[in-house]
Image (tube, rainbow, N blue to C red):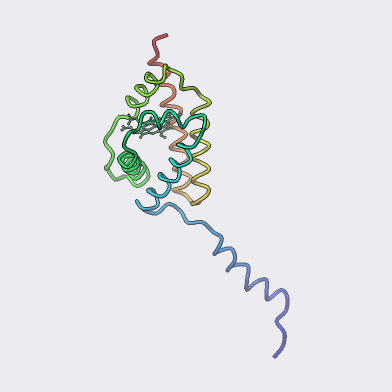
Length: 149
Ligand code: HEM
C-alpha cells in the first residue's frame, strides 16, 4: 500500500485535534451551575475580595443556587431569579464601611472572565461576559450614589 502523503495526514488530523480542544458554549443550567461554583471557589480564595463574601454569606449552598438562578435567568430568559442585586450590594458596602472600590469590581470581573474562558466559548459565554460588565458598572454606580458623603 502506498504511504500516505504528509499533506493528507495534516488534513486528516487537524480537524480532529481542533474539535477535541474546542470548548463548548454555555448550554443549560448545569453549565451555569459549573461556571458559578468554579467562579465562587476563586472568589472565596481571593485575598483582595474573598473576605467580602466570606464574612457576609453564611449559607454557600443557598448562595450558589441563587446565583445559578440569576445567571440562568440572565442568559436563557427564564424567570427563576427574583432578587434585588442593587439593594444587596448597597448593604454589603455598608457592612464593609463603604470600602468596596473600583479595583474590587475589577478583580471580580477578571475572575469571572477567567472562569468563563477556562470552561466555555461561544455566543452565550460572550454574553455572560458583557452582561456582567454592564451590571458591574451599574452596581458600582449605585453603591457610590448611595454613600453618605
Ligand atoms: C467587588 C464586587 C462584588 C462584591 C464584593 C459582591 C458581593 C456580594 C455579596 C457579599 C453578596 C451576598 C449578599 C447577601 O446575601 O446578603 C452578593 C450577592 C449577589 N451578587 Fe455580588 N458582589 C460583587 C459584584 C457583583 C457583580 C458584578 C454581579 C453581577 C454581575 C453580582 C451579582 C450578585 C447577585 C445577583 C447577588 C444576589 C443578590 C440577592 O438577590 O440577594 N455581584 N454579592
